[in-house]
Length: 272
Image 1 (cartoon, rainbow, N blue to C red):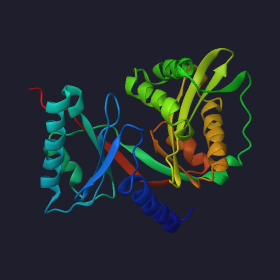
Image 2: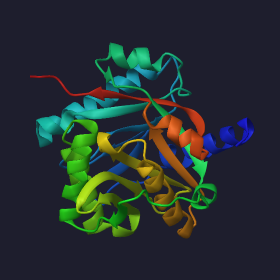
Image 3: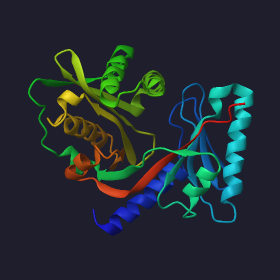
Image 4: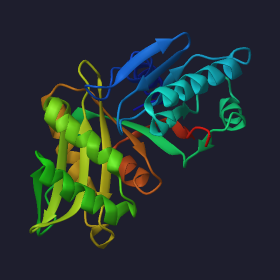
């Protein structure tokens, strides 16, 4: 995609996925409060700020207002409810918003690259499974547990929030998720998912964790192509990824273009 097209796609992404966001789960709630759009969710669901329209004059007050709101929620619902994420994009205003978040007690995680591709381009990729690999669509709790097992080997951490999110989507909104495993016989060697919110032009690719012993064999590429075909069948024009440094080169070789960078800023609440 050209620079101008990428800019137009980024504007569309900001409008649909961020400013006019819909909840990522049936029990989650998205609301716009002045210049901020946030999501809150029960249990292990994702909580955070999706979009903001701030300037030097109001940024600190709006940050403080969101912290106060989530702290009040903590008092009502318990300690876990206070944790939330401010998802900052490089083009967000003001230019020093990251510094202001850190000053307010937020802790930045590793930056990721926001990538996008036309679904039709990726769906046409001629990708054959590597020798000994088959695909298995995840439809139940047993399949989710296999996905979590391979993610543990791939990322070195447990991900209980992701497990609950995938299970909830499969149970309550199965049309909004495509979760898939690459299997070597009965052993999962890679797992990934795609989330498709109603009415959105963007399907989000998430996960993509491959057992280190199976990297470099085309397994990750296979899972991207599979999900692209599903999105194309649904008429979704774009695929979006928040890519790590490991996956970015693979995705760019497949045809993804860079929209910018994003950094999650985490607030975990006061200890008291």
